[in-house]
Image 1 (cartoon, one colour):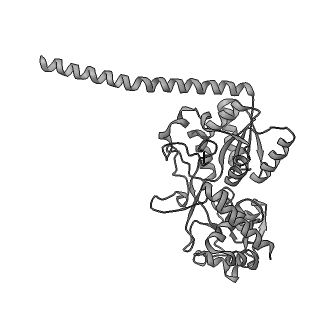
Image 2 (cartoon, rainbow, N blue to C red):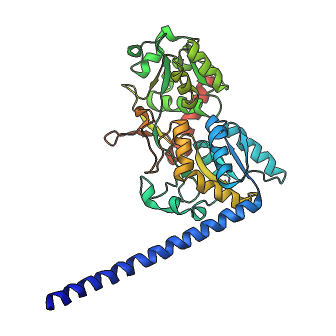
Image 3 (tube, rainbow, N blue to C red):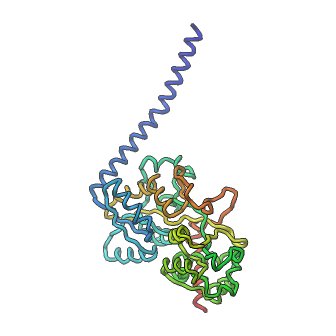
Length: 371
């Protein structure tokens, strides 16, 4: 009998302890859901959300339709290069026009323009969707805010970056094992790059080459090797597929991977013997505009794009590794998955963006101007 009473007391104490621990958590969950539902209703009253980002097929064909299906709110999408969008926003704001709610911009535009020129609001207090605010859903134990204040710019991806693509009908893999192989006279006029004289992936790659190998290497690669420059990303992919320029330094994964699926003999190169592999936060960093015309719709979209559904669609469609823990990565290229045992060069590190890359980019521009 005494043992039974003792056992019952232990059970009662444990039950009270469990209730005392779980009750606040349950209340917090209910409060979070209530706050989130209020955001959804307020966003629906605003009627639309204006998102600015690069012209990704996954955005137009998958993300926007799914968001509208989920919430009944249309997305007005302003597509363009990040630098072009930044110029447009500056011009509009100079005239008192505030047209953008959410930016899905490249790291340079995010750090230097949107954050540097104070065009955005703090995003951290707006992320209230329960599954987004839950730190256990993120590989770092929390949402990664890349900016120095850890409040404005969310980095949602971290993938091993592609250093280049080659057409293996023209270039054997054993002919491109090191960065110095790019300087082989055999490849003169056979290398394409996004224009390195403007902000973007072309100048980012050039800045990395300058950082790792110096001025002489950059001069040889971009001038003596007659690297073909363009601002038309699809043109580079077409040249690559047809073997016109069988080495591409700036082709985008979402342009090239469909060509690979169609049978074109294209190889994605992630590392070279003399150039450590890098990781980056492509395809975008997430920020919300200050003085947004539709602030609640902006908050709704920002939360949803970081959800399992929203980020999962983008990660699979673009082929990038998300920082969420609950997104299936089995369909991704294994080469893009970071390995814990490897030390990578972080191409989206904030200090590299605003100082190191900018300094090396300006040195590259001086080299190219002096040709």
